[in-house]
Image: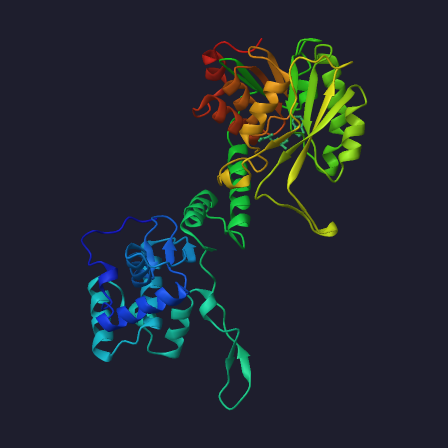
Length: 436
Ligand SMILES: C[S@@+](CC[C@H](N)C(=O)[O-])C[C@H]1O[C@@H](n2cnc3c(N)ncnc32)[C@H](O)[C@@H]1O
């Protein structure tokens, strides 16, 4: 976005302030009903573009001890300062009744700022064609679907292109919406905050996929390889791994991978050690069946997901937990206690640039403590954003992982190293103390 010119008069001073009695009436209304018309927030700067009086009244009421609930916000992305200023002028002109003198002052101010007369008349509105252009920069919610025709009947109104915006209901969600808009770049947001964040995560993944990712990179106590685990982990020696902790894809094409995982685990795990796999619920029986191809069933655990809903519309089911299967390589050798139900903090903690399938770290740390000991080698063939690796570092395990998606590997490396991804050659040179 272009930088604002500090020398120009502030656009927000152009319109006359509300009169004292108008402001007091607004404040009384907000005390009684709360803010009903969402203020418009600039997603980039966080500035209030429209609704300053509403927010000021609300803030004063709270400071005075009046109980007013948090208010809805319309968080928007503006492609330029001019676009933002035009929205400010237009939305205020529509809401305030200016007398002729006041409108003349607005026009004079805008001319002073170097606006063309045509643009000023567009925004202030004196001709029906000009008014249509004014509407095109105001939220589409203010425009009726149909317009009355003189002499009877109606015709569809010309609906302007909406500015990218996300409606939210609290200050916390406002910062989430702003982060989502930033992460989305030029892409349009989704229909609500959750969908906008999902889109932002997919956009971030697509951007990372375009980065150059090394085939393998090591850090102190960890190594991640890019590629199908059946190929890139083929050199892991037989019976050398203390535990496998992973989260394979749960979708239908991913189900056969549970057989491949079972074969891999039977080869690399030490006898009696655990292969722990997150499972989906739609295909849970088949996933358990396939894990049993080469391994022995030990137990099924549950990760509870407070506030998190997986919605299976076809069956009208709101899911709130995730199954975790414990299988062992041959007869299970008991080494520690297993607690089979854990709480995850839920999806609320995810940021828009996280991996779309990123799991909470907390339960992984607890699970690692149940299936391995400090210093032991843990493998995750489906690294994703590297949650198992992050939990291994937090609990003092060595970690080896792989993922077929370079975008996921890029994020996993970033999370594990806490630094931007080095180029392949440098990466190898700089790698210290890997897992082998
Ligand atoms: C559910 S995600 C893992 C999410 C991870 N637990 C996290 O917290 O970010 C599954 C991952 O398996 C990867 N994957 C799928 N098939 C694979 C294969 N054959 N070899 C390696 N990785 C694979 C996908 O690219 C995806 O990133």
